[in-house]
Amino acid sequence: MKAIIQRVAKASVTVGEEQISSIGKGICVLLGISVEDTRKDTEYMVRKILNLRLFDDENGKHWCKSVMDKQYEVLCVSQFTLQCILKGNKPDYHTAMAAEQSEPFYNDFLEHMRKTYKPEVIKDGTFGAYMQQAKLEKQQQWKEKTRSKGPSESGKEKAASRAEVDPSTSSGAEGDVSSERES
Image (cartoon, rainbow, N blue to C red; front, side):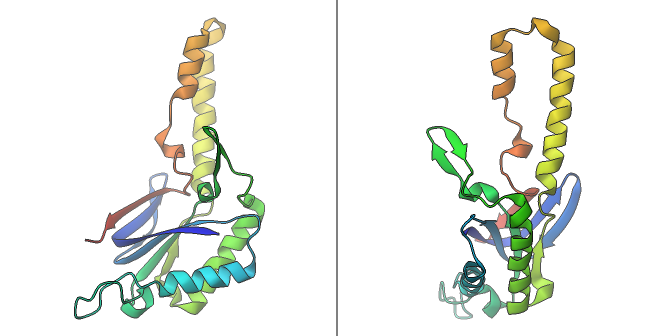
């Protein structure tokens, strides 16, 4: 299991046009689940995330209070791309747990986090919703391109269309994750 944790003044997850979750001051956690992860890894990661000393105390001393000490919120986002291994310039995700197993695993992670802290301050998005939507949009765009170009499309045009990057699919997150970093 890998996690990227960022202190935020506020953060939100948006799927399509709808804002699914938002938090005020706290942390945003991107979580990548590996095929080798176990319940013990979940317990360890939840304990570490909630007890990380990321915040200042009342006297301004740095790095001495956790999200639980400060009673701040937590926004979690499933992020399979954290399990990427680069093979040359091609990403390989074979170490990432498949969606069928990772969704219940991720939900168990969230449940454990809610039991350990306060359930009302642990927020998340909709597992896999963004990638499914992006995939459907991409398929529709591809159908429209192939219909309009027809069989006369040159090799250079094909390569150029494959090289176009759709920013909505680049993160692997379950939606757009926006945050304002804490100063």
